[in-house]
Image 1 (tube, rainbow, N blue to C red):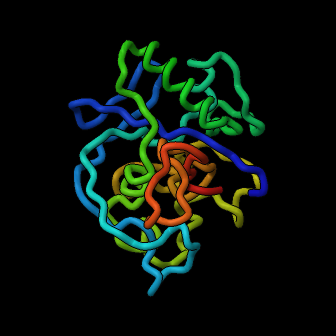
Image 2 (image 1 turned 180 degrees about the horizontal axis):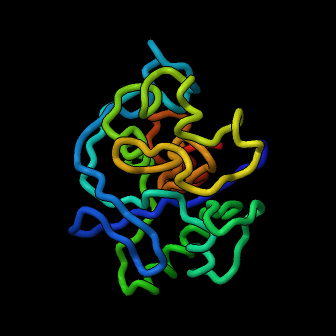
Length: 206
């Protein structure tokens, strides 16, 4: 898709296996573990900001099973900034600051402080769902259309969430539909670490 489409993937700290909040956002527990972050240059094509591959450890957290929908966004923010309108379509054309404002208001609405944007490490760990391959379903890109809306099948527009197959941990659209904000700052490669200032990292794709 030529137009940059953005969303937030909200995470939540709780003590139950699954949770649905007052506006219908469903969360699933992501288990603790470790994984190899980035791509393996011996077998996977890509860009330099996915290198070097390195091991990361992650504590258990909760992630929304889908992108934030436009209906959920309106329930918190009161207006819909999206270009491709639809109650169950993901909200898009939101900045990182918009995403942070949404989370602040959602925390106030729910009477908590537990909602936050995932780090880039948490996002990739959740997207991989225990896999060690290029995609959560394997290395063959031929299966991508079963899991994602992307350039070849999206008609350059967003689609309702959860229409494609979920990964093993029950998360939808991690390989496509829209770009997703994280709390991490962008770095040209993993040797340089995450900056405290500058551009924020986007993951997913469209």
